[in-house]
Length: 335
Image 1 (tube, rainbow, N blue to C red):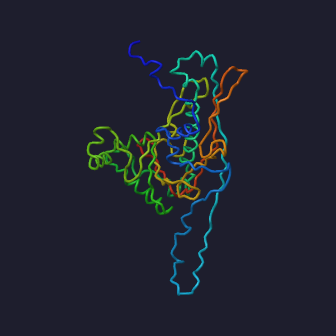
Image 2 (image 1 turned 180 degrees about the vertical axis):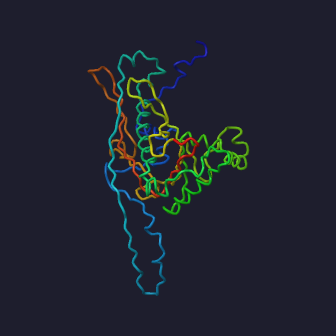
Image 3 (image 1 turned 60 degrees about the vertical axis):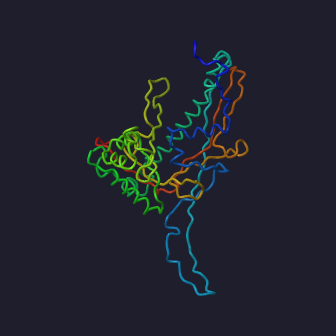
């Protein structure tokens, strides 16, 4: 038809490389990398440091010395945890007949690479969701100071969410010694924030007509990076009717569907950083040094097709459980 692109005008991507594979971890809908920074490790198992603010946060040993006097010894304990990455993978067969008969413009799509990568994103996202919304992840569990209900539901017109947010920020600061820099919300809580009168007034004062033009409250609120956890997945069993929902909005979790997480995410992850969560990813040694996964393409003569297989080794871990807090029951109808 007139106006349709020609083959010469179309752009066909080459097969995914290891470098391209790592881009899967930065989709806007998936937030695992934003909350649990990837930490490339040289081995499939090893040690990492568990952050304890009591180590080094005292001045009792800062004594004045006379020249020639020996300084007082400072004793501290370095706690270590053990990580052990798990190999996971998926593969998809592209039959030769399908590949030959497909239009050029859709041939790359039929390789299933995007399907494979999306499926792996879902697994990673759900792993962090289980960890972050589990009360026992935090000191004291559901009865501790890092897990508490909102003073009043945020969808009440007279409620100021900043009261609860400030309480969470203060708790994290006093317990961990780091200042929270991130706020994560499932869609329900994020939508409540965009409709809250106090928050809308704040946006009007600070950012002019941002809210009026876009309906958005922006990506920073109360000096916290605001992240909406909007990843979705199909919970139905194979061959059953689809049951698509938000990964982070699941009433089966301890946090329910209406909550907000306030915490610290280290911008430069390492084996000794105060970030709350980390994901240790084996760098695949000589296969793809430093990369987060590997895509293999190989023939299957018996089935007359080509396999596309993605695999990676990783594990989600809590590094500093004091560096985060969860505010629950943010809406009137409690989940």
